[in-house]
Amino acid sequence: MKSLVTGAVVTLGLLTASLAGPTLATAQSTAPHQPTAEARAHGITKAGDAYMGWRQTSTAVTTAVMAPAATVEGIDVSSHQGNVNWAAQWTAGKRFAYVKASEGNYYTNPYFAQQYNGSYNVGMIRGAYHFATPNDSSGANQANYFVDHGGGWSKDGKTLPGALDIEYNPYGATCYGKTQAAMVTWIRDFLNTYKARTTRDAVIYTNLDWWTRCTGNTTAFNSTNPLWVARYASAPGTLPGGWPYYTFWQYSSSPIDQNRFNGDQTRLVALANG
Image 1 (cartoon, rainbow, N blue to C red):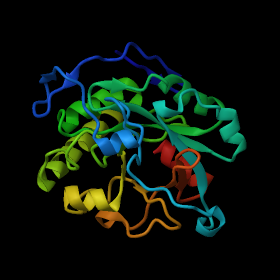
Image 2: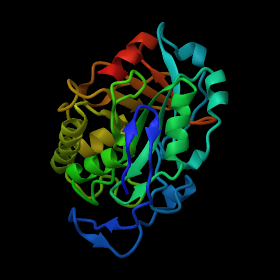
Image 3: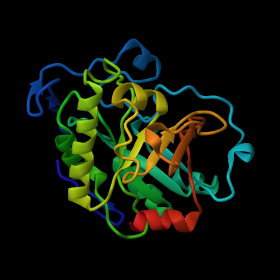
Image 4: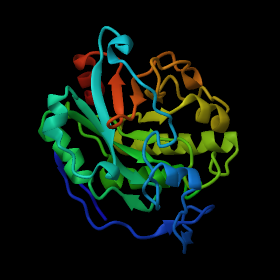
């Protein structure tokens, strides 16, 4: 499959059917990923169903209490949302969107074109995200897969840098069978490859608990990569990895994943422009 991302145009081919093996970047698996019981309870029933914050717990959120002086509201979506009514989201005050493009090196979102182009067409600033499965293949392999399937970037003032969704494993061991040092190496491999392909530092989406468990709360990326923190509460709380501030905050999943940009619209455009 080949995709072209230029401004608002995305061309998608057929979904890739192969599954990467658990240890070698080029190995092929003969069986699909099997979601854990917990993942199935969150709607993940097959390979590719993973989504941002799937294991987070929603709490009641009062926007008026949380909002700093300058913020921009947005959402993130995946195949679970299907064809999104973007006009309604714009009317609801959403001004940016992140769309799941890919997972591992075996899945692309069949609704990606409608979601990615639809958000752009109503005036939103949009970006793509990749759900990482570090046990399947190398960071470089998955970064290339992401860029090749919708995760690219263009300096049009409407396209955000791609985001690496690195969080709980819905298909097995929380840290994907990697040591903390190996996980940091995998993340660095992904980020370096993504930057080489796009010139941009990818956004890192994660949460404090997973980042602490699986990377040792590494501070290796806090001066280069914007943080997208997940915490469903009235405040973002302690940030992982020594980041001095968050760029995006996913604060709720009701009625759809809710996000806030830490700045005004001009700063969001500046992030899009690089």
